[in-house]
Amino acid sequence: MKQMLLVFSAVLALAASSAFAQQEHEHETPQPPRLKWSFAGPFGKYDQAQLQRGFKVYKEVCSNCHSLNMVSFRNLADAGGPGFSMAQAEAVAAEYKVKDGPNDQGEMFERPGRLADHFPPPFPNDQAARSANGGALPPDMSVLAKARTYERGFPWFLFDIFTQYQEQGPDYIVAILKGYAEKPKDMVMPAGMNFNTFFPGHAIGMPAPLSDNQVQFDDGTPGTIDQAGKDAAAFLTWAAEPHLVARKRLGLQVMIFLIVLSGLLYFTKKKVWHDVHAHPELLGGQATKEPKLTRS
Image 1 (cartoon, helix red, strand yellow):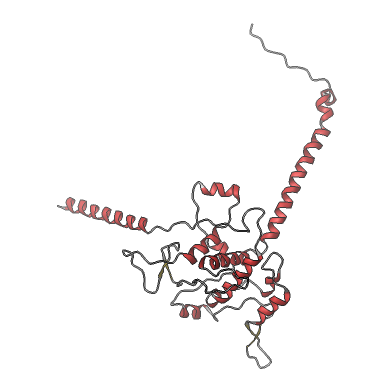
Image 2 (cartoon, rainbow, N blue to C red):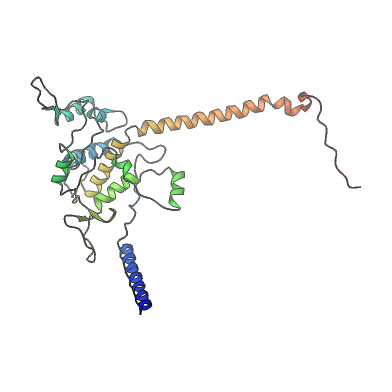
């Protein structure tokens, strides 16, 4: 009887495990689709118009909950970035209120932002951010495009080595922004969470942030969810790696230098050792052949 109970328990455990595995397979998180980016590849560079549109998406939508603590207003005018002039960056900074102090009375105060200031956070502290977002803490977006990635798996990561594919971060961001959908009927969603196709576990605390024509771009580009998502992802990629263009330019210069240096070293070696190979006696006498061993 005891053995029968053990066998019955094992069968139940196996069935439960199979059902759980089947449910996990049904709700498996798919890989974000691979997109085309102007900054991809060894010769890629940022599209200034796209970065400016992405900044507007961040300013009007993302900045309500997400901080950008590691980016200064003056960075908007840096070479290889969104292409703002110093006057434009200064005007953007003046639109923000930055906490400063203490003053002569020992009190903190708010003042208009300056070029040297970082983007101020939307909440005074993490507790206030959690309280305003149902317990979820919106992550800082300074390096989000580098921190959020996914595994491409075999054999794709081998191809990525040769193609220099490094855009998993922006691909992931766009997929999340566009991945909101109705949850499957057989899936239990925690209270206050939203279903997202590409978010690990599918349960995300952030509601869908974008809608069509929510952001009106100054250059007349249609403000679709797809366009706004790609522009925001491009801007966040620049925020995470503002010197990408300079790094790629330096890398190309180094590669050219190494190729030229390799050629010079090769021909120098041929020149230096030419006489030695042509006249082996210069090494201390004419080379003698080793005697051949013959069987008796």
